[in-house]
Image (cartoon, rainbow, N blue to C red; front, side, top):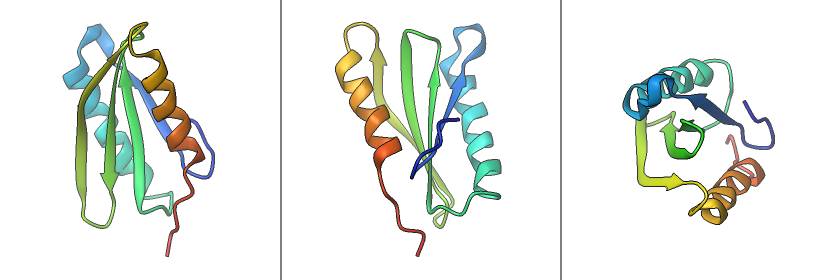
Length: 94
């Protein structure tokens, strides 16, 4: 868990299975939303050199899976932009 003005939950996918890892991340985001008072919960699932992002819209009760998969080292710059963008994002809880 990376905590900043907006938290980011990072989950390691076991056995290189991004689909099951994404499901695990979604469940953890839902649990996190019960204790964190933020309108959106951000998450990422990784097998180390492959990353996929997800977003839980708490009010709408909807999880969105990013269609883009980021592979290292080819996608290092956009991956880092996403990570930094999420943790630096200031989200109003009003």
